[in-house]
Image (cartoon, rainbow, N blue to C red; front, side, top):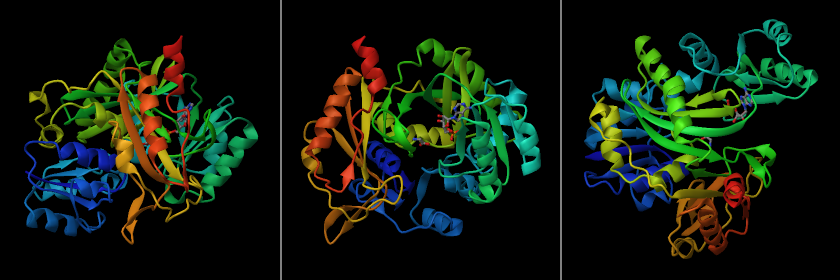
Length: 425
Ligand code: AMP
Ligand code: GLY
């Protein structure tokens, strides 16, 4: 079977690496891909917003499965177009991708299906938002409804900050994403992510992870797309996972199906483990980046087979997903300046040396310039290693980081600290 993978980040490098190990794979194509993905796939210059061009390519190259990595093409309905053309696609269609594309949509679904989540009000005008704000205590969370590249959430520690956040949202800072806002009750607890594959009716858990969103050591500084992650998240015990499946994931899948918008793909639930039990913070309609890198490092099965079963609605026939019990940990090496304006063009060397001890270096924002691998984005490399404990995985990953020569890059030195501290207790 020939596969087309859409996307160009570290997540897609991890997917390509795993898809390439599938015995049933014929040719693997990636659009646009990156130099790391090129080790496993033929790169094609396709624009994912040009649906007709993607369909034409799939027909010309007998693509039996299209795997859509990032959220933008999902929210844009690429999976619908492919399915309408008879091409199996992994990822939800436009209507179901609203679980990520509209925070208000997801909150309303939670309310109807009795899914535990923070109390909320949706507001489409500033006047409504100001009135609704009166009903919330401080801290309060203000969110742009739509996709805002991870920047549309403001945790206001004072009423003044909340007012300023509403001013900013309704002045168009987030474009159409901020035309409507969700005001939410502030939840306390530890955060963890849970992943599940579903074809709209059957569901298979796909493991847990925790990431580090802040740019600096000790979880300080501005938010990023994620500076590192590890899997599993041992705070999400088997009992808590079962509770998440029963109270959050199952009712979501069933309600979407009953509403005539069955969800097919991976459901990535951002959870808060509150004193009252796990609550849903948000859904993403795709694998996390860099969470995917650690999940794929633990996944033991045939990824092409499994994703095709999701795309074709045959998930009920599949056995449980096999994930190694060892911990996988990934460290993001970013270009200086990230998450502001990252420095482009800095040379990267010694990846082979870093991998010689068993680590895997996934590439995200890289390019080849004059024959040299260089930085070409904010998050550049995802240095990933496994171990029997988090401390072991962390030590192996930092040993690999230290072997890499990337003078214009940086990384956090404390990825996994929560679990390492717990292990030391
Ligand atoms: P989101 O984009 O919805 O995942 O929000 C980004 C981050 O904001 C989350 O990972 C949480 O750390 C935080 N957050 C979002 N909603 C809440 C909430 N209701 N209470 C506390 N923290 C929140
Ligand atoms: N690492 C967070 C995300 O992929 O949304």
